[in-house]
Length: 212
Image 1: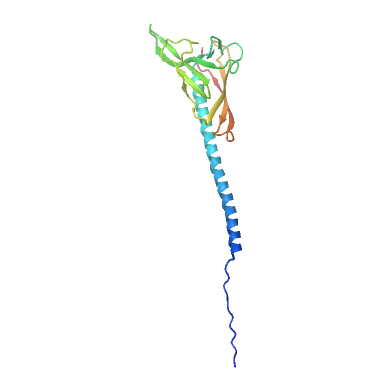
Image 2: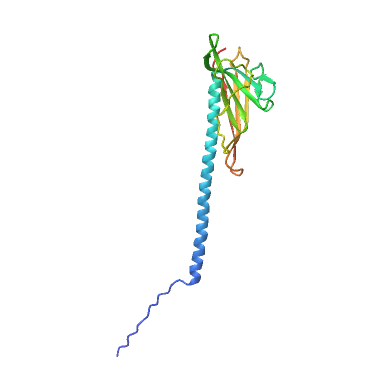
C-alpha cells in the first residue's frame, strides 16, 4: 500500500499593523517630498523677483549714465526750500544724504528752438522720490536751472518688490577745464516679504564726453 502525503500551501496577506505602518511611512515621505518641492518653488520665485528688481534698477542706472555722459553743467538742487548747490566744483562734491531730498539736473544733448531764435539744450532731471527713481525732461527752452518745476515720471518699478533706499552722486572735476567724472551709487532691497528681501548695491562711473 502506498501512502500519498499532500502538503497544503496557504497564502498569507498583510496584517492590519503592517498596512498602518506602511501608510505612515509613505505619508512621512510624501510630506517631506512635498515640503521640499514647495521650498524649491518658493526659492525660484524669490530668485526671479530679485533678478527682476535688480535688472529694473540697473536699467534706470544705465539710462542715467547715458544721459550724463552727453550732458553738461551738472547741478544739484534741494527739492524743498531755496537751498541749492552745484555738484560741479573744484573739489569732490556729493549730491546725497546731506542734501535730501534733492534733484540732479543738467543740460542734456537734446535741443530745442528758442523763441527769439537759436537753440538751447533741454534740461533733464532725476530724483529719488519715496522708493523710486524718477526722471523729468524739459520740453521748451523757457525753464531755468533750479526752478524745480518738473513733471517727474518713475524710471524704476513702483511695486513693493523693489525699494530704492539710496541714490547718491559724487562729482570730481572742474567744469570748463576737466571733464567731470560722476560716481553713482544706487542701493536698496528686492523681495516681496521681509524674510525674502535681499539688499543690493549698484555702483558705476560716468565721464562727461562733451568737451567744454
